[in-house]
Amino acid sequence: MNSFRYWSLVLLSLIGLNGNSQNQEKDILTTFHTISSHDLLNDAAELTSARYGGRLSGSPGYQAAAEWVANQLKIAGVKPGLSDGTYLQYFPNAYSDVLSTGSVILLEGGNNMRKEYQFPKDYFPGSNSASGNVSGEVVYVGFGISAPELDYDDYKNIDVKGKILLMETGLPFSGKDSLQQWEPYSYHRYKFQQAKNMGAAGLLYVGKIANPNTSYIEGFVYAHIGEAIVEDLFNGTDRKYAEIHNDIKKNVQPNSFALNKKVEISASTKHFPDSRSCNVIGIIEGSDSVLKSEAIILGAHLDAVGSPGCLFPGALDNASGSVDILAAAKALVASAVKPARTIIFVFFGGEECGLFGSTKLVESPVWLKEKVLCMINLDMVGNGTGFQLGNGKSFPEILKHFTDANEKYIHRDLSASESRVNYGRPRTDGAIFEKAGYKTLGLGTSGTVKPVYYHHPLDNTDALTPEIMEDAAKLLYLGILKLANDQTITTK
Ligand SMILES: [Zn+2]
Image (cartoon, rainbow, N blue to C red; front, side, top):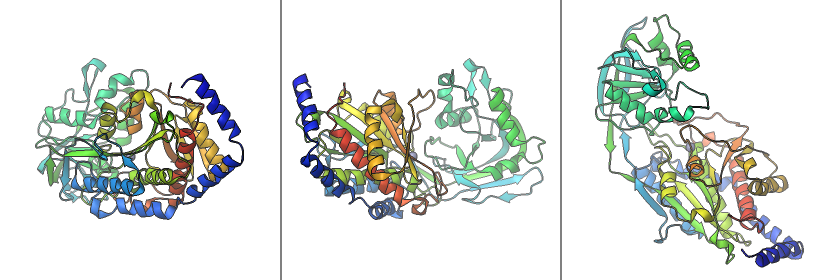
């Protein structure tokens, strides 16, 4: 922008403190008050219904949910975000259907006789498990990592051929300095492949959450297990699970051993290696002939973890964020006061499978990166009493529009954090944008009021607090509108 235009705009915005601006504020509030928790809850009920099967990215259920969102955008008057006039940006996305709850059975060992475990109380079937039935002796292999260059090997001096492994997620290392070196070993896909390469027959993965961010490996059967099974497996070994686990982490020293138990795991799945999924992208073109070349991206992942054994509705994670931005999009397009800059709404697919959708959009952007003012990501914004703007403190010129809106009209706790370098594995769509060099903020909630059922069948609409969803959409509407119309900032 040339300096004449800049100063005339500043002047105009100063002169704007008259009746005209009061009318504008009135118009903005009229739209603001149309955002209602009732509509948000209805939209969340739609997305979490059985018809979408838990929105597993790559599945027909996810595709139907994506089409529902695209249709909502169309009805509202939000234009298609792709240059070919469509809303859906496709990418490859293999997935597996879990056809039954499968089983995990302790066959013998310790003080326990044969014991059949229960779904969903004790275990969840593996989201990408192979179909079949495996049994064998159980070997605890810590974090399942062979990293010779880091002088760390959970498989050293232990025979796991034909055995069932008991394995931890994550890393035996939590420092920051050399976390980057450990990053490749933090992926579930790495751990599964390594287990298979070592000749393991199957896997009991510690932590009872459904997780499609894994790979399907022919003949490799696994399940996610909770504490009760882990305790049974350690029973009679004269070792305490918690101590072993903590010592490995504290000393960064492997400690693998046979548990003298025999277990059987069975799974029934169907794998679709050649499937695809999509992001849903809508756009509101800016109203100012110059500023419209700059865009603000608002994103939330639409996908969830599907139906591994039963419906996992994915209400908080992340129907909540999706319906929050859908409501903000509807308000921004209906608003009498138009955003001067362009707003892009993205409902990501493939987040739960490994951030596929955000990676696709960063690689095939729909807007020139240099002309993107910022990206704001919403994940799990539907349970709490306040707001948290991740990275907000690092971008005060962006943050101020949200704190202003909150202080004036919403009156919730709003805290902001400083951005810091992420040395580990990216865990959100926002992190993918941040890594690619976008100014990225994350909107989340604070003051959780209901139990959080993460990747669990009980993550349904009862787990939501509709009032905070209404306020999140209102905060987005006001904050984004003011940010889009702020003449004092530029993308440069
Ligand atoms: Zn999420």
